[in-house]
Amino acid sequence: MTRRELVVLGTASMVPTRTRNHNGYVLFFDDAAILFDPGEGTQRQMAFAGVSATDLTRIAITHLHGDHSLGLAGVAQRLSGDQVRHTVPISFPASGQEQVRHLLDASAYDHHERVALQPVAFPDASARAERVVTLPRVDGERGSAPGAPVLSARPLDHRVDTVGYRLQEPDGVSLDPVALAAAGVPNGPAVGRLLRDGILVLDDGRTVHRDAVSVPRPGQSAAFVMDTRLCDAVLELADGVDLLVVESTFLHRDADLAARWAHLTCRQAAIVAARAGVRHLVLTHFSQRYRVPDELPDAFEREAREVFDGGLTVAADLDRVPLPPRRRPA
Image 1 (spheres, helix red, strand yellow):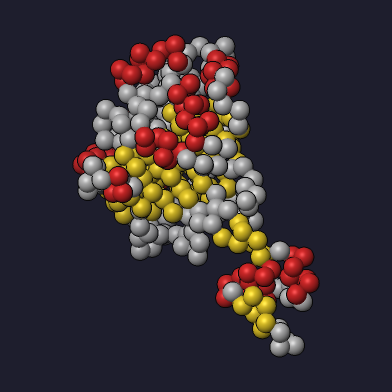
Image 2 (image 1 turned 30 degrees about the vertical axis):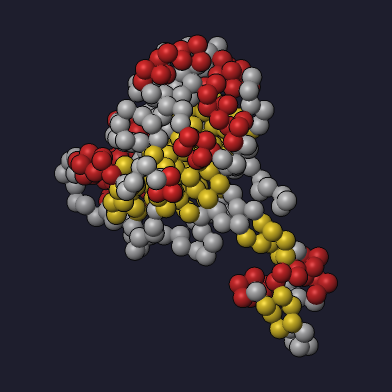
């Protein structure tokens, strides 16, 4: 059975609070489990959430501010201590490579971890076509089934080099059980061969083509947009996604602070979701300035609902948010 859900490890911005840890998010997508932005305390939050180091297939860091990266040191040591056998790529903005190396070697341990550094660089920021980087698979990376989702990155607009990520499953087809039965295709291995090969010769000599017994299956998608000003890349990453995880550091009454520190407000994040056709919006990365519960989560939910009527989660630590059911084909 496939698993497609977001596990929220932490939701605070610069300063953690009594109830909110630094950032951390694990997206489970079939046999992939991507850890986004492991802030301080991520290893402990993984224990609370029931996420093991062996689950992780990739680590993706948006930028090297501490609330998005300090937990990398502990997670890497956990990969080593648990002797995780598969390679775990670590992607991050290329300018942060020195900080990443320091975090991976922050203390003395045996270094049994198998990681592959994958710095994300944009060769020509002036050329729109080159402002998207598709992250290649690496030797030993787990989860390489045909039709596996593709992870790509775009540059955002923060005070340090920052990237946003989008996970996109390719469109495919699903076999129609009624059409299969009408065509005389038996249950079992024959169905798998037809899906894989596109054609099946039955015992009576008849030929069944996949196109005649299948329907389109739209791919699912998720985007992660952390610290950034509002920019074109935010909308491009969010365009039509099933799940958008986005920073919502400030309420819009504090838009001046958001502009000063290069963040989004709750209203800006919700407007992006509405314009981009997002199916489920997850707001996170909250400033410690807001009171609980009248401002957080209540005021954030009210502000988002003024402009966005889709699925909405004002995230709390250890929340689990499933991807919405697959879209119906057009």
